[in-house]
Image (cartoon, rainbow, N blue to C red; front, side, top):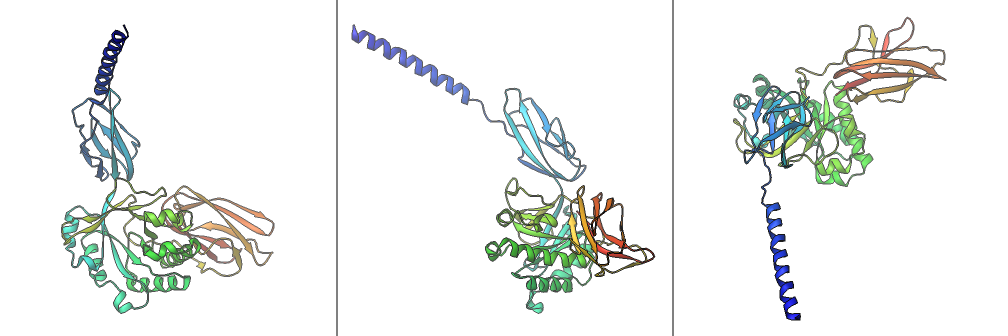
Amino acid sequence: MRKKYIALFLVLAFALSFCTMAYAQDVTSTDALTLSAQSLALKKGDNAALTVNDGSSVTWTSSNPNIATVSDGTVTGVSLGRATVTATASDGRCATCVINVALKGIDVSSYQGSVDWAAVKADGVDFAILRDGYGNEHPETQTDTTFAANYDSATANGLKVGAYHVSYATTVAEAQQEAQFCLGILNGRKLDYPVYLDVEQPFHSTMQASQIDSVISTFCNAMIKAGYRTGVYGNTTLLNQFKTISSFSAYDTWVAHPDVLLPNYGGSYAMWQYTSAGSVSGVSGAVDLDYSYQDYPLGPQTISQPAGTAATDSSMASDTGAAITLKAGKTYQFKFTPKNASDKPTFSTGNSRVIKTVFQKKIGASYYYKIQCVGRGCTSVYSALPKQNAVRRCVVTVA
């Protein structure tokens, strides 16, 4: 009798295991849903088609239709930025594709040798970031030997141009010297894109946060004072290490993280160097390729200054430096304290299409002047005493 029960138990166990295996096989037999591409790069107004691997009927959605729309798998670039398109099947399977709506660029130096910029332009490239040089000690050897020729030919062929300077500075004094060296190479040339400070040397990651912050702000403020847009270039390791320093939010960021679907950086950035092994007509060998999510205007950055104004003087203390960069849509409040208590200044903006006045209040001996950033560009904040010329107090760049 006992043997009989044992045999029956074994039969039931076998049957149960067979059902379990069959059920598991049924669950895993469904293939994952995949798309014809994991990422797409489009310009505004461009279209591209996505398809699913097995022809399943799917519902298409975009994470941000203001940047990219999708209809029956056809993706359209609407505005610069990044969105995710998702295809969802009726059985719940889904797949995604990252959509970069961006301008396409390259960054080059003497390592690329002679570049055929007409061919580069014909290959769909919109902009180029050119190395002007590196360091500050030896201008005769540390100036990029191709910068001048690259600038002349790139601009002649209709590309927008920016520059980058490789930094070796560890002190404010060295950053000042690098800034002057860089400005000497630029020699007043008009740029559309910013002048970026490249901080990717191994020793940069060993610096104190306050130290690298001072180096970056010293260089970038010198660029702003010279009339250029400015920014910081670095890899994601360094950017994440120093993500709390003010420089990374004050100036445009160009992030380097090649050959990944998305950069591993949670901060805001205007440009992404997405590969270092790109191929472009007109360039021999590999070249860095970049996406720009901001369309910088043609021509130099101009500082609007009304007629009858004077340079900044020392008659008033301020809690803000001579130049700041703010994000569009943000507000900022200045605190000005006249050295002469009887002075009663009024404050204004040089270009109300860039920044507009929110209010002016006197509290104690100080005046509080609040602005709102309403459009990208560069202008100034001015103070004026009765029957006197206005004085420029701060240059404001809205990015």
